[in-house]
Image 1 (cartoon, helix red, strand yellow):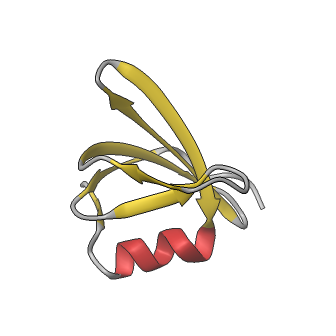
Image 2 (cartoon, rainbow, N blue to C red):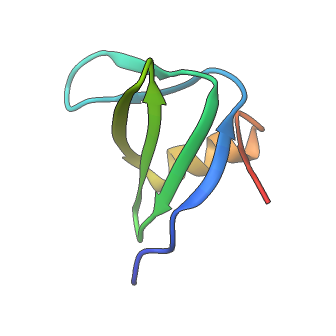
Length: 74
């Protein structure tokens, strides 16, 4: 399955990801870009002027969208 085009979204609540085996890290509320793949999503955002990138399993991302914590922008 080919990756989709990046989509603009907004974090509207507590969204976290885990870097490797480390602790959960919070993605700050605000604009976000999501690149959805077959089984994972790559998220990118700016944090105090520093670009940040994280990957999370697709099912976790879909739960955040379903719960309204990540809202797709039109």
